[in-house]
Each structure stands twice: as C-alpha cells, then as structure tokens.
Length: 308
Length: 99
Image 1 (cartoon, each protein chain N blue to C red):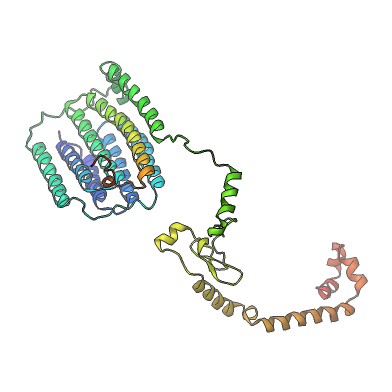
Image 2 (cartoon, rainbow over the protein chains, first blue to last red):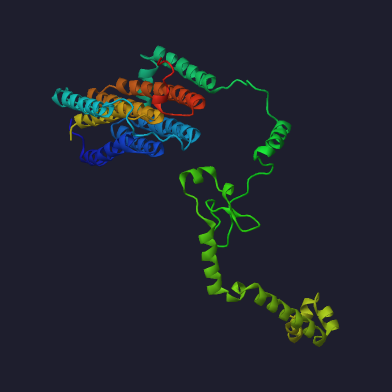
C-alpha cells in the first residue's frame, strides 16, 4: 500500500530526525543528553503510531514512555548524580570495534531481510477500526488475550513490590536523631569540624549567583560557601573580579560614594553642621504643627519645603 | 512511500539500540538502549498490524509497553541499589562474581 502524500512527508521529516536522536544515544557524553534524545525519539514514535491508524497506542506511548518511563530515568539520573560520567577508556581490548561491527552487521542483516522480503498487499485498518480504534483493541484484548492480560497484571504488581524490596534499606545502625547529630558535631570540633551551618554564597550589588563565594569579615572569600558540585566542576567564580567591576561601576555612577573614607566623613560632618545650623532658622513650633497636619502642609508649601 | 519504510526505520532504530547496549558502559544509557530496541519492535508491530488489517499487532505492542514499564521499574531499582553499594553506575564495576 502506498501511503498518502502527507504521511510520506511526515515520515521523511521524522525518520531522519529520529535516527539522529537515536545516534546521540551512542555519542552523547552525558547521560542526561541521551535521555532527552530518547524522549524525542519516543514522542516521534507516538506521532508515527497516530499516523499509522493506532491513536490509542500513540496516546499510551506518550503517557507511558515519555510520561512515566523517561521521567523515571531522569529521576534515577538525579539520584546517581554528576559523578556518573562514563569513561571512554576500553576495559576489554577491541570491544569497541567488535561492538561497532556487530551493530552495523545487525543493521545490514535486518534491513536486507526487510527489503528482500515480499509482503502481502497491505490491507489498512479502516475495516478493523470501524468502531474506533480503542474499541477494536479492547475486543481483541479482552477476548483472545484475557489470560495474558491477567498475567501481565500480576507481573506489574510483582514489579512494583520488587522495586520496593530492592530499594528498601534495613536499618542496621541506631537511628540518628538531633541529639546524636549535635554530639557528633561537637566531638568533631578538634579535628576541624564546624558547629554552624556553611555560609551562603556571596550576594553583591551586581551579582548574587551561587557560584561566587561570600566574604568573611576580613574580606577574604569563603571557599565552602560555594556548592561542592560547582567547585568540583571548576565552575566557581572568584569574588575579586566581581568586586572590582562593582567598584568601577560605583566610580562611574556615584563618585561621591566611591571616594575614600575621609571624604565620606567630611561629607557627614558637613550635613550634620547644616542640620544644626538650619534648625534655629526654621520655626520649630510651625514645623511641629504642620508635621502631622497634612492639609495645613499643602496650603502652606513654603514651610515644609524649608523643613525638608 | 511504501509501508516497508516503517519496518526499515524500526530495523535501524533496533540496531542503534543494540549497538548502544554493546558499546556504552554507563548502566543507565545501556538501559535506554534496551528501551529503544523495545520501541523499535513496537513500531514494527504497529506497521504489520496495518499491513495485515488486524489490530492484534497493536495489542501485542501494548503488551510490550506494559512489560517494558515493569522491566524499567525493576532494572532502575537494581541500578540504584548497585549504585548505593558500589558508588558507581558503570557496568564494568559489577564484577563481584569474577574470581
């Protein structure tokens, strides 16, 4: 059967993309990238199912594979963490070339067999899907495959229980409570332990990202304030460059505040003098009366202006 | 475009999944290769169902999906428990039975 033109376009757009995404499973360095690529392949497969008159399976594919299975993969990737890099060093000699050879051979054999085989003229599912596709599926599933379905149900329950059993940890040591934790922290003090929580990463005027260390009272960066993962990856930024950049911006926009401490003190004294010299000039009783009384203040704009 | 093209695509995806299982050593990526192989067989099932005008192929693909879900649950639980004891997700580090 020759598929319709629209379906052909869909296929020729999706198929190369799917093969490319599947190849990233072989070449991606990080497992997360591979997982995202596999998710892409699975969504494309759902589209192809719907194009091939199997809308129920298309929906199930999205719900089960992209919704449940790949999310489970992502959760396990998060559990296993960033240390799960797989090295590219061969442990079995020649394994890589044998693997590539076997993969290519399998592809050649499968594609050869498929393209050599003669298939009967395609029928299409218009007749079978007469009472909608889910109904047709249900008739077959609950008539010919009832027993298999029951067995699969038992399998699912067994799998759920087995996952619980496998990931369950029996408590081998006494439970560690708040008191035990505090005692352990105090006991670790002589060997370089600390009682307080770690400092939070630095917050500056221009930058409050978590990759910049905080400063201690002496102005030295605190290394432990940056997340351990970022330090291992070498993605930590030094506080010095940010502080310098901030000083430059300050000099440019507010030179007064950037001047040395002496000038700042001078300015302070001047404002204090101004305030004290202004005080006898302004009428104190008038200010007291007009302060809380808003309408009076708006009627006589000169008095509050002098006060301020 | 013939329906056989779908089967060829399924064969290519299946071989990529098999090559992943052979070549990669991160257990999670190996597992995703197995998933890709199962998905490729599903595509072949759906295509053959359409070719023969019989939804039994789709029912079988449905069964494959259910069994794959159960398999993923158990497999990932095994990976997590291995990671807990050996601090590694590499398939090369699971060599306790090797004397």
